Image (cartoon, rainbow, N blue to C red; front, side, top):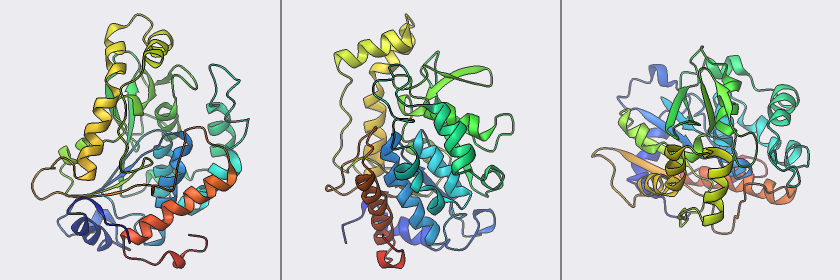
Length: 319
């Protein structure tokens, strides 16, 4: 078994596993558990596989708070609805095609209308009512398209339809729509401002944090190159200097959060964090479509999570 990553990860695992079969609403253990679910479009297949393992371990209702953005937020919603195992095939059966991903469809490479209007609404419908009734508070990361500020939307806030919040979080301004209206603001992918809300979980008083990442443990997000910065300025900022500056600092925020989750920087005293990352042999990409590679990545997410909890991967067929 690979060594666990994080800060006192064994303690985090023990405290989370003690919630198996219990509801966060009446756990009575004095702990506050958080789950962080990383997305990244098709890279989210790994964290979705991790959700399958957590579901099998009886942890669907165990977390007090769940933080996620982009495809990770979609994974989190299915997980809280008890549909993780049901949803994982979306990646390798429903969206690994030109209907969703088409590099020649400039300005709309990732087709959000197809994902939300066809797949999530009809082919693999999310049980919205069940997700909303979860004892776990779902906090969805989005980016304000005017200021570049990160915002955490309460998924159970009835002012916003859950699917609208999920779509705003997944709207990549360079690969899909430029922005998506949510309430009184224009928004886009939370990954631009707050892809890994680890600090938010700690500021909320969480004592034990599990992070399901979709990047390898040695990943360091590079500073956006010249072409990417100029594309962001042209496509997103459009003369907005505040938003342009925010776009240039994306890597700083992501690396700080990743360092905190992986134990490279220290959390507050008494906080336990465990991070589960794709193994070095599992390489993921935002627009990958190969069905076999996606199935392998999903199985790897399930396997690595089960192993982290000391469970045998054989308990799940194909893990």
